Amino acid sequence: MGKIQRSKFRKLGERRKGIIGFMWRYNCASELKLVFIALLLFCSVATVFQFLPTRFYPFFTNVTSCPTTTIISTTTSTTTLPPPQQPTDQILETGHIKRSFYPVGTAAYNFVLMSAYRGGPNTFAVIGLSSKPLHDYGHPTYTCEYQTNQNNNNTSSSFSSSVVEGNKLSFQDFGFARAYVVIVVNCTFPQLTTTTTTTGGRLLLHASTNGGYDRSINSTDTIIALTEPPNSWHPSQFLSPPKYDYLYCGSSLFGNLSPQRVREWIAYHVRLFGAKSHFVFHDAGGIHPEVMEVLKPWIELGFATVHDIKDQERFDGFYHNQMLILNDCLHRHRFATKWMFFFDVDEYIYLPGDSSLDSVMDTLGGYTLFQIEQSSMSNRLCLAQDDGQFNKKWGFEKLVYKNTKKIRRDKKYAIQPRNVYATGVHASENFVGKSTRLPDNLMKYFHYQGTVAQRRELCQQLVQDGSTTVENVPYVRDTSLRLMAPSVKKFELDTIGYRLQDTRV
Image (tube, rainbow, N blue to C red):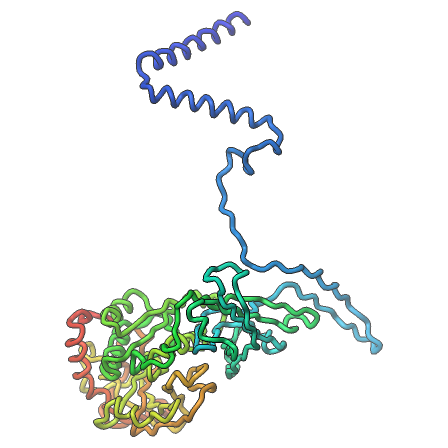
């Protein structure tokens, strides 16, 4: 049996030798010979490595492993404190059992930075979110540090620092805040000089919890809020005339918005605000492809900008972090416009009579802020005479019945942003100067609540008379915007052509 096995192995070896010899002599190019030699050498070295101790390996990883990416942390290392002693239940003198609670970790971030902007030669604004329980039950503080670049490079040893206490601006959340609240920190450095315009530098925010998470522990996080390259700003930019007369800061847009309603809204307001105007939209999921097609012509003409803010959904704030977004818009465009407006895409600014927006605003130059009264319109009542023609009419053209019930209604507003340090949804609490409330015979806004989020025919009930009552709510006919529809449609056609004629609801 042994002889038979040896005979088989001998024949197999001769066959392999014959194949290799045949390839070597007759069919192999010189390059193939080099490949065989390199492969033989590599396998020999790899075999030797298997028997070497680890300390003799020429690499940190095994020759069979894949290369890995090294991540270098820029976080300043600090001494780790020992964990607090876990408390135990106690029996009090009254006989009551005092139960204990052992907190581990944190439930929300100390600070979530969105943006920071220079507001002058020596002042900055830092905009972000912070844990609501931290601010409700603790006393967090903020310290600002500006590091001036001494050698025009980014090494930490080349900075000289100036430190001041940060001023956290207050907001009323009206109980609507959720896991996070909006934070705007003003950092003003009285000793900064204009030399930083040529040298550059960076703004650091030190956010301290001060017992907000645990009374015995104070945690401080340092955030690089803003980095300024050399010659990236000049003092004149804060004094120069603004680029725009009017700039619109829009709230977070979300949901399945109607492209047709957005089309009507922007055509109307570009016509009203004029050539030196700009509209900033914030996409929290509402600017889907069909809405984007409506905005695209106006973006191409320089009238609109869209910011994708969907990542803020990670941080649970009220109304898709509306207050955060509006404050970012304020400081981002603070020196770019003379007036800044805050209202929604189901609301239409209206000037009664023959007044132009410029003529009205000229009378308000002495005010930092003015509020605008609301006229609430029905979102379902239409004229009976329009029956059968609904698809040819725009939303504000066919919804003509105004709610006249005597109730308090929300107001919207406009500001001269250079005098404002933080803003809100219906007004600002942090500004310098005077404010006023405009009478509705000078300016008002029509509110078609919810219509922009309805992708269906708006007219649900037809009315013949000039007034009616529906579900105990009185309505009267108001055709103010209806009469403007032909002019708005012509303006759109003259400005962007027929691009949006096939827009669907």
